[in-house]
Amino acid sequence: MIKTATHANSKLVAYSIYEDLCNGSYELALTKIKQVLKSVCDAHCLPLAQTWSPCAQQGRLGCQKQSIGCMSIISSTSYLFNPNVSGLYKACTELHVVHGKGIVGKAIGTNQACFATDITGFCKSEYPLADHAKVFGLGGAVAIRLQSTYTGPTEFVMDFFLPSDCRSDEEQKHMLSSISCVM
Ligand SMILES: [Zn+2]
Image 1 (cartoon, rainbow, N blue to C red):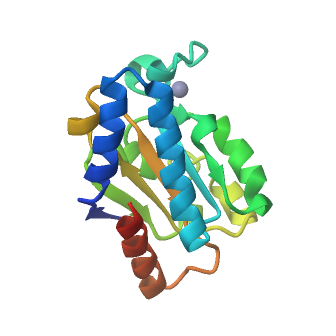
Image 2: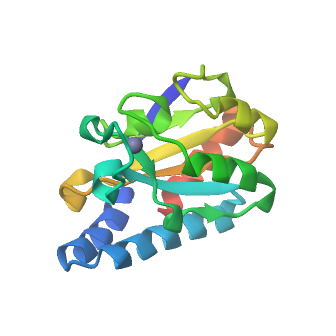
């Protein structure tokens, strides 16, 4: 169910963010990431996009799994295009994901985009919000890691939900290539 594809263009975004990080402008880097998410969602009516980073990087002291690379959402960089899925967005802000789990956990180990045709098909241990996604009528989702060669030790994974009516292989394929074009 998970497919991967190379996204060379994400290097350009990552490079610009890398410059901010080098200049010590972490907040500016986050602002830039949010702009990317907003422009992609606005252009393609994607209901929700979020940015993940390691809990240790965010200083989430309450997370017990920081030492094993647990990831969570940077809520200030999320972009909610469709207010109807705000319930899913809220649930996501509570979520912690470890390496190898779901598309976000898989994206962290690769410089390729990780795509799921239908996240509602995941079991709970793989993606605890599969039931939520079903309630909100969502299916396809893609996670893209900003290339670490540019961001250094700072890790970011961007995660986009596809529109609920984007279901067929062809539509999803087209949407994925559109997302990578904007980026
Ligand atoms: Zn965590």
